[in-house]
Image 1 (tube, rainbow, N blue to C red):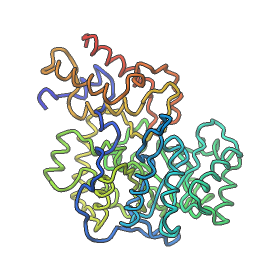
Image 2 (image 1 turned 90 degrees about the vertical axis):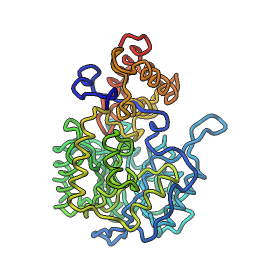
Image 3 (image 1 turned 30 degrees about the vertical axis):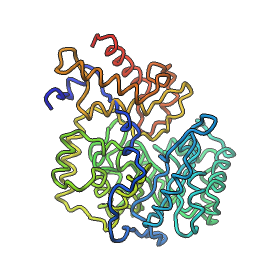
Image 4 (image 1 turned 30 degrees about the horizontal axis):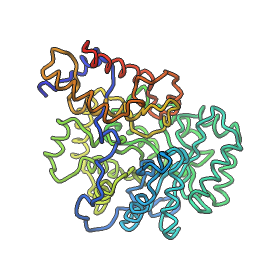
Amino acid sequence: MENKDISRRDFIKDLGIGGVALGAAAAGCAPKSSKKASAEKTGEMEYRTNPKNGDKVSLLGYGCMRWQMKRDENGRDVVDQDSVNELVDYAISHGVNYFDSAPVYLQGQSEAATGKALSRHPRDSYFIATKLSNTRSFMPTFEESVQMYRQSFENFQTDHIDYYLLHNIGGEDVFNRRFVQNGVIDFLLAEREAGHIRNLGFSFHGQQRGIDSLLALHDKYHWDFIQIQMNYLDWTHADPGRNVNAEYLYQELDKREIPIVIMEPLLGGRLVRLPDNVSNLLKGRDPDASLASWAFRFVGSHPRVLCALSGMTYMDNLVDNVNTFTGFNYMDQEELDFMEQMAALIADYPLIECNNCQYCMPCEYGIDIPGILLHYNAIITEGALPQSSEQKDFRKLRRHYLTTYSKAVETLRQADHCTGCRKCESHCPQSIKIADQLIRIDEYIEKLKQGTL
């Protein structure tokens, strides 16, 4: 990579593990466009049958965490409902029938916006998945948890939730604190028995001991499905200090015959913002295939997967993904081995593991946490990190970094405003030490500004 050479050892030594991202790339999705990016592929959407109840679920599911936002007349960020309606209409007309939301997505606006769009279609034409996100209190009460549960029914304008999840459970200790000690799990089991919840499961982020403890409860609670983070990078290269390899998760669920829903198949867009050497290898193998399609084909080629979620913000994203899952092309073993080789190359880049899930937001001090971290990651994957005044093209790289940082993150929302309160860190499913990263990035930027790097 010539002047783009960033040795993993030297980078970690000099700066620690981190990354920043460029302009639109920091949004975690493709550039905005109102056009349908490519010709629609003929054929049928790929479906999987839930063996527990016969549901015919589209292998491509809609993750409703990244709807377009706009400013209202009061300057507040609100969901662009017209855009949501258009995307939902296209998705349903092209066979997508699984829509996943949560009370905390998009500053609490996702469920209602998704519900408005879906309610314009027959209720039996789609499956609703949402979550009990009682994470803001260390010891959530029964009353506040049930209130959140009932509010989801109002937001979706429905009398039943098809797939209901206990949100972001990392182990039995968290499960007990948020659902057992307050009696919430007994309430939810009764709701499942009454038919208000058709399938009860949980979403998992964490280490092996966490999933092992939760699966040990399967005989007691009979989990109907489980949502896991799975992609070709995390298959065998998950950060052992944060998450267990997806290969282990998949195998443990497969042998128990528990249907699997996949989150983060693109790692919040990181698997479409790849280092040049990896992107070139994928494009060289199939010039017509999008980078996203490789990631989706990987997860979809595992038979226990019921549905793979994608947070499709723009029509381009949706059309491309629909095309991937229409007449789905399963990977053979040689292609799966090839993806493992790509994962090994990606793993050598020291990036911050931010997936732009926005769980850390809003910051009470107004900091754009994902924007800062993703901008840093994009600079790394570009191979454009200014490291030293002795570096070739250092002045150009320095100017590029500072200019794109100012464009990606508003001045009052940049890393220098972090107080180190660490309130955001307990909400991060990737267990990132966010304050440490923000302070480190701010110190690095200050060195760039002062010319002392």
